[in-house]
Length: 283
Image (tube, rainbow, N blue to C red; front, top):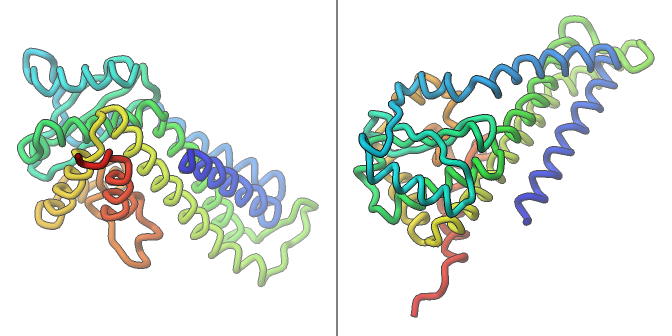
């Protein structure tokens, strides 16, 4: 519930930031142009991103005959989550990772690398795939698309102001000092909010995945293994297409420290700590 409230507050914040920036720099007309342009770009992404990303990763669709154990595991978890059966894909990469995509539960797909299937135990893999199904159940692709739309519109407004000068809602030139500060700081603020939304959704998917699989300890163990392996086994396709890193159960490109504010995923340590707190005490 906390993460749902946090997501709602962050979505309201990025919307308010867009409205304020539009009023200050672009006026009503500039604000609408930026929003329509960002909506157009992200509508295409929302509708077709599943096909594009699966093609990028050379993902191969599998079924009950080609990957019986993995496919039946996903089917059982989908039933537990009360979701339609998603399409199931395998990616021939050594780096252990997985992701979900698709515009809604009726058009969803889950994918896992061959590396994660080899590395994790059956219980750990169930936790990972339950996490991905939780993303599907929570419609996180839609949420990330909306936040990306608003962040993109904010950046576009800042660019408009940089090249054409800011205008307030009355059409008057904005204060140049205020305009410069907003032009540089607003896109950074939008990016921070967008990343915070993404991290909140990862926490919520961890919680939902633990509930679907019934084994928070197994998901925690899986995250620790994936984190350790990610240090030495690069996910080559993600390195070529870093924009897809946010989709993974663990971002192979993320960094700690202050740069963690711009990370799409929370720290592994905090994710594991929260999952273990969900686990019943050992007898």
